Amino acid sequence: MRPPHSQRSSPVSRYVIRTGFLLEYLSSAQLREITASTNKVEAYHRFTKWLFFGGEGLLLEVHPDEQEKRLKYNHLLTNAVAVQNVIDLTRAVPQLIAEGYPVKREDLAALSPYQTRHIKRFGDHVFTVTAPEPFDADLITPFPLEAASEELSAIA
Image 1 (cartoon, one colour):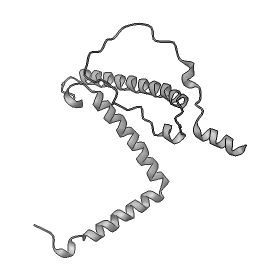
Image 2 (cartoon, helix red, strand yellow; image 1 turned 45 degrees about the vertical axis):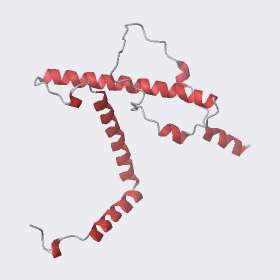
Image 3 (cartoon, helix red, strand yellow; image 1 turned 90 degrees about the horizontal axis):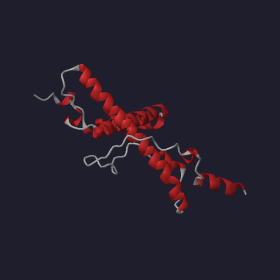
Image 4 (tube, one colour; image 1 turned 90 degrees about the vertical axis):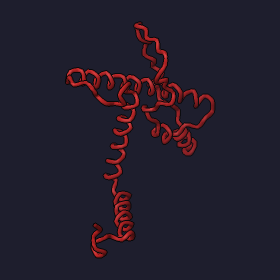
């Protein structure tokens, strides 16, 4: 049974409420910051679920120890892939700069370690137990970014 006409909200009032919320959201830095943090956490959870093999992220075991073990393994895998993604992205930036592509701070800020396009999720993987590669000190060298070179040219 539908409520009487006097108790139903009109479509116009819904637009007014929505517009009011959007104006409040746009004017509040705190709300935008909370949303940005939430989006990062949700991206991590989507990435974790994507890497979860079998059962689409459902823990079907009844034993709490087995459930905890699967969760820990999945988070270990997620963190390892995210770190490798960061290393790959960090190595790619100097190559792009060397090839003449402009790289801006805003572009780097938009990069995410939760990318999956390049990952062969189901395939043949060979794992070897060897010593890891030595740390590449070039990974921590700051990049000469376009914004910094523009600032220097503006000063001159």
